Length: 530
Image (cartoon, rainbow, N blue to C red):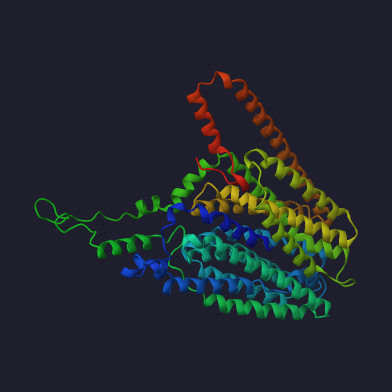
């Protein structure tokens, strides 16, 4: 469940270079202060005071991102519920775990909007409070209802992860987005890795799961204190942009750029009354509503449509596997009879996911032509590993299959993020990913209700993995069929253009080549905007 973090930050990694229209803006706390005359001509003068302030803020936020991931008991929640808390496998599989998908779906949209409207910090505090509630319920709770409440709070923490990846970019100038995104993602991945290793070392030393709960509770309580100490940014992407206009007016007034009093008078000498403010007009012209309207046009863009579908369908299957794999491990090697290596496996899969995500940035192919084929082949391989996980009786084979499965998905995630973000502004990109994530949660909840929930088929966990295998096989077939159609059409058009080359006038030919160049992807999947 940690991969939404990585993917949320990858999204920011991919967007920062696309905000061309904002490259001249300073961070909010710089814009609110008058610029000394010498700093306008001396670049070094601009590196003092406020700039150092945002650096300290970013360092503090990265430290928070590391600390909030330190929950060494998290890889062992399922063994803890099945052993110490004495819940049955059916209760955990069919009654407790499904609540996570439902709560995530219910709270995602409100949290997404409140994150921007309240300017990030309150949502991070809410996330920390939810973490505290989770571990308090795990430590003190004993009933089925209390464990379902624990999963509900888990859904809140997952939905609130968007606040961290969005918050950090409100503190820095656009020119620093890329390096700051790297810092923030590295801090979170390091936190997940250290947390998993620490938990595994504790289990190897015979530390009881109850003690791990208390240790995790201590870490998340410290994270709550850190979240309450975070700086409160003045701006956000959708609902808090008016301050920029106010600051621009103040600077213009100070520079004498405002209209003179004479220009603001009617010919008869009476002052011109300002136009009344219309709340409905303001709402209709808001950035958020405008981008919602623009989403309709994005569906017609093939590359955006493909990778958005990948985000919805592949991520749904991926997170279903993450939610239920610990139950599968416990069935293959019950924690009451065997040593548990959940922390070690989670640490290894996190490390491999980071490596494959990094390697994806160096893959240079024509994504407009080969995207469907790459997604289809990797999805088919992931399906094979799911079949292996569901059919094997060897826990170590299941461990290795899971590690590779996560690594393959994390290889595709940054590619998809870049392909979606390469033609969108930062704000519109965030909205697209928000919509994609919400559609994915609806699909995920539907699948859970049908095959896992006790009100549906209530399948045992190994049968669920065969269902996930069939799901990925269906996706792979669709992707590969689309790939065959796209590639065939491409080379057929090439032959037609080659045969008609002698009949095309030089002017028209150069125009055709120019249009083809505009849609040709650059290395690493970046395309030229039309």
